[in-house]
Length: 343
Image 1 (cartoon, rainbow, N blue to C red):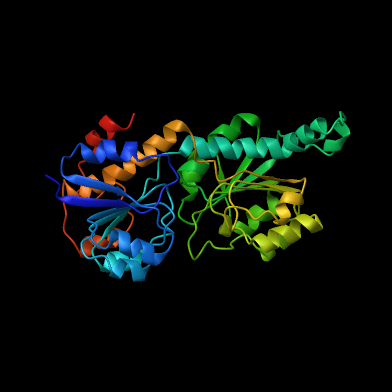
Image 2 (image 1 turned 120 degrees about the vertical axis):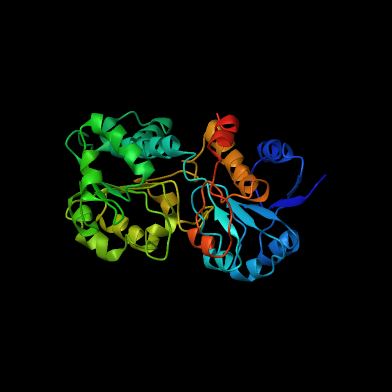
């Protein structure tokens, strides 16, 4: 007998087989897939939902205030910037994400962008395909060993990247106000200020989440401080970098190039300046993706719904911890359930 209605506001997948596999096993949850783009469409689809799984559709304060039954919202992936967390907390709605599904994929992709950018793989490939077999089109290329890389943010993904960079002989700096000097030191990384990082780094790899505090944190001031001409890598969120400032820095030579998996507005416009720059690599927000990572993300997003609706627990990956002051649930006992369903 169906007791709960769960709406997936929007999704890029061919179907919802992973979500349905998990949610239908409970015997009490109905899954409804929607294709919402606007606030009004979300309100119409979710007004009576007990739980919501979200990708890109806006869950603003206006939307959340109109949810009559919702107890939990989970979001595919790490970021929760589509959800008004304060409004959800005030309404007693748990918000959860999936913070650990793609650590290897994103760190692998960042490493691939670093190596491609330094070794100018894309430039060389394009020139060969145009009939130009000449290594000089890649000048200058510099040796990797002993270069300094600065990691903006030092959470799980950049920590994974750091481990992959060490055997290549990089000196690794990190900026993260939430990480202790000792923790960084234990990982063989020097913790510095953002200004020190941009002044010293040959490569800057951005891994900070998008928040009001991090939006535009790499901007004109930071580019002006760069004593070298670093390669800029971004696999986090586009708006963490002031894009107009980056374009100016690319044109002026303040930076030597960029390799970006994310930009300010996605998908990229056909008239975007990046598309005409040989020293810029752009990939379509694909760093998170592998077949395994996609299944894990979707499964864990569904499990967060079950934590709240079926087991009356705070979700394993609760984001808005302040909601504990609004509603009383059991502490999560979900480790075994997650281990059984996520291989």
